[in-house]
Amino acid sequence: MKRITVLGNNSGRNAGDAAILGNLLRDISEQYPDVLFKVPTTHPGFIVKHFGKFNVKPVPLLPWYGAIKNFGIPMATAMLNTDLILICDNILFDRKFYNPLFNNLASISLVAPFCRRKGIPIVLYNVSIGPIDHPYGAKALQRVMDASKLVITRDKQTGQLLDRLELRHPEVIQHADCALNTDPTSGARLDEIIKEEGLFTNQAGTVGFNVNAYIDNWSMTGTFTQDDFCKIIAEAVDRVIDGYDVDIIFFVTQIMDIENTNRCISYSRHPERIKVISNATYTYEDIAALLARVKLHVGLRTHTLIFSAAVATPMVDISSYPKSRGFMKTIGQEERFISFENLNPDYIKQQVDEVWANRDVISENLYSIVAGEKQKAKSSAKLLAPYLD
Image (tube, rainbow, N blue to C red):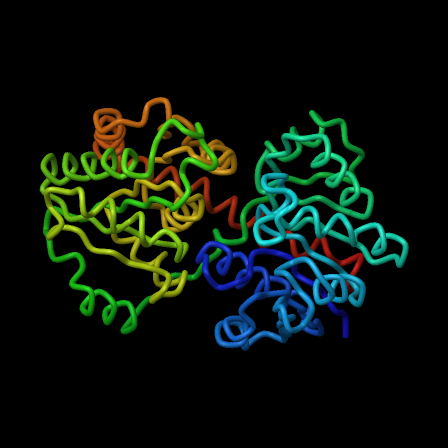
């Protein structure tokens, strides 16, 4: 039996990360049934509860096992006692490089040279990389690249970053994000959620919104306070409600975002028209299913955009992350983004107006384009044959 160590943000706090893991486990298990997945995680119970149907073993990243999150004995042991390492999502960046509670690149780069010496291959699996803004980050990334056999990206920007930094690297293949292949909840369970939450009772429709908890850490630091940002979003939400007589669902895909979501609602003039759907209660499959029912979605976190694309729901990107912009370009929606320079209620409403007027055409185009991206994401499993067959 081959062992695969899967490195990502697998704490259970982020629906996007859970979707990446769930779809990766399914795609690879279908291709290679005789595989054991080792998943380093700060929440072993989450892995067992939600992914126990696969042959998966959580590796606890907890202090009493000698770990400070991803730094310590469990992570190193998981990387050095395996047949293949998969690095997923967007965990290779140099922000807060020396903080193991936030940064993965530093820890992975320390162990990667020992993996290389032991002949343990590393494959970057449907990833984004970056930002890499400092020489120490580039050096750390080079250590990972030197131990890697293949880089499968989910965007063009990752390959461009490697070339710009002039790093030695293996073959780069552009595929897509695993989460695109999420199977939305359906049938009686979906009906039950809709009834319990009182959703989609307005014949005029519902529009989705999403915000996060640390907007000023990634985009235009110091330009917006949290209150400034939430007041802008709240006013934009009110204008959408007033303009189209719709209801609003705020989708929370990272538990830490709940506070900012509630702050936005507190500034709205129509809080009674707003519902919250959070991954603290619902699975990523549930969230994808509900996003399929909204008229359009305005999102800040990348995976709310990815879930929307997966179900052909038109979207607007509040462009906080480079990976979000890269994804929107990949699916032909790059013009439907709002930079922080243009973040004001008028411009948000203007973008919503354009998408609202063309939502049927946009949805048809998304369905066509994303079908190809889904196939790319799934086919990445076949590229692991040299290490698993």
